[in-house]
Structures are given as structure tokens and as C-alpha cells.
Amino acid sequence: MNNRNLSYWLCQIFGWGTWTVIGIMATFLSQGGVQFFPAGWIFRVIVNYVIFFVAIILLTHLLRAFIRKRGWLNLPMRKAAPRLLAASVLVGVCSSAQVLAVDAVTLRSMTNLAATLYLTINMIFACILWTVFYTVNIRARRTREMEATLREAQLRALEGQVNPHFLFNSLNTIRGMIVEDPRIAQDMVTRLANILRYSLQRDRTYTVPLEREIEVVADYLAIESIRFDDRLKVRMEIDPAAAGAEVPSMLVQTLVENAVKHGIGTRTGGGEIVIRAVIRNGALAMEIVNSGQLSAPAEGATQIGLANARERLRLLYGERATLRLENRDTSTVAAMVSIPA
Image (cartoon, rainbow, N blue to C red; front, side, top):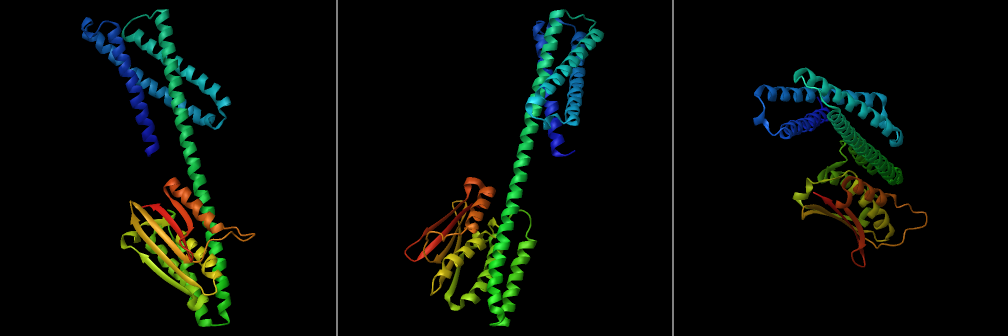
């Protein structure tokens, strides 16, 4: 039995069990208490309610099976509601008839019209309440599942944006080195293969340890360092406590690529990239600092990398994660990320 079915049966037993206990107590209290009746009568009343408990669970379980077979919960509520209401009334009437029949046999009592109407209305109300609870629960669960599916599809689409974008830039760098220095081009292809292998082999949890991400970033920066020669300097300051923290895969690489393209790449003299990471106040705080200054985006620029990074953080962490870019001083720009540790 899976967790979903287990929860269903626990709710059935607890809900109708509570209803049964309340019914037993109400019966005794309405007659002045158990001290006024013989033990045999009390025993038969309890047996009747136990039979009711089993019967109502069976009836509502059959109602559930009927609802699922007919697919009523897939219909718009304006169409589903009348069907659900009619089925609930029918089950309530059947349950009332069961109670009256068992009472007539075991207690040999004839219930008057007023009591019969009260019992019937009471059971119809209970069955409608059951149907409402079941419908709301199923629709809420389906909404959660749909949101999770949509979230997964969005993450997959965003990952698909990251990899081709990175691959295109890297191949352009390698292409420029093939004629100039085949040996270096070979080394660059090896590093690019490492990055692509990482991208293809990472697990499907969307996050990876920071230390693994940094290894890929190091390969990427090695490729870019060859293109920039001595114009690109790299410094990493990763606190050991932060190395094992989980980060969205390819997030750091995306920010570093942005720093290279829009910072170092626009400066004749190149510059430096500093990657820092520490655990602070229960969160992973990262900084990618690069030489350069923020400026208005060029005409036609998509800024897809940063938009992608922000959207992935939002999907994975909601409001608990942040990504900000700002001019640190007159010569450096910092991308600051905070992720729950």
C-alpha cells in the first residue's frame, strides 16, 4: 500500500470512527445515560454502530470508486457538483436504510417518521461533507502535482538554455585557437569535454555540491584564460565549510561567463575575476567580482544568462534566494548570490 492509499484509509477510519463514537455517546445521553438500560441493550447498540461504521466505510469507498471511474473530478465544477451531490444523497439514503434495517432486527424497534427523517438528513449531510472533503483534497493534490510538473518542465527548459549558450561561446574560443596552436586547442577540447560530461552526468535533483561546480568553472576559466593570455587573472576564495553546500548546477558558471563576457572582455587590459563563498547566517553567500562597470545593455542584448539564473533560483528557493549585481567601486562589479544552506 502506497502512502497515498494509506492516508486515504487512515482518514476513512479516523473520520467515520469519530462520527460513530459521537453517535454512540449521543444515543446514550439522549436516553438519560447507560445506567438506565440493561447491559444487553447497550451491547446491541454498540454492535449496531460497529455495523454502521463498517457499512459507511464500504459505501463511501464504493462512492469514491464510482467517482473515479466516471471521471467526475476531471469535469468543471459546474458539471461535477450536481453529480457529486446526487451521489452523496443516494449514499446517505442507503446508509440511513442500513441503520434502520439493523435496528429493526437487533433492537426490534420501529422508528417513527420524525426520527427517520432526522436520521436520513443527518446521514445525507455526513455523506455530502465526506464528498466535499474528498473533492477538495483530490483537487488540491492535483494542483500541487500540476505545479510540480510545470516547475520541473520550466527547470528543464532553463537548463536547456544554459548549455547551448555556454557551448556556443566555448566553441568560438576553441575555433580561434585551432590554427594558431593545435596543442592548446586540444587541451581546450579536453576541458570542454569535462564540462559537457558534467552537464550530462549530473543527477536530476537540479543542485550539486559547490566544490563540484567550482571544478567545472575552473575548466571554463582555463579555456578563457588561454584566449585572454595574461589579461585574465583568477582568484578563488572558497571557505571549506561552503564547499559542500548545494547550488543550482551551472549557476556559478553562468555568472562567471557573464563576468568574462561583459567585464573582462570589454577591457583592453583585461582584469581579474574573484570567486568567494562562505556560510553566513545559515545561508551560502557567494560573490563573483570582476573588473569592469555596469552599463546599460547593448541594443539587441538578451541578457538570457542572468534572467535564467534568477528564474532558476526563484523556482528552486522562492523568496529565500537572491541574486544582485552592483558596482562594488569605480573599477569592479560584484554578482552576489544568497542561497539557503
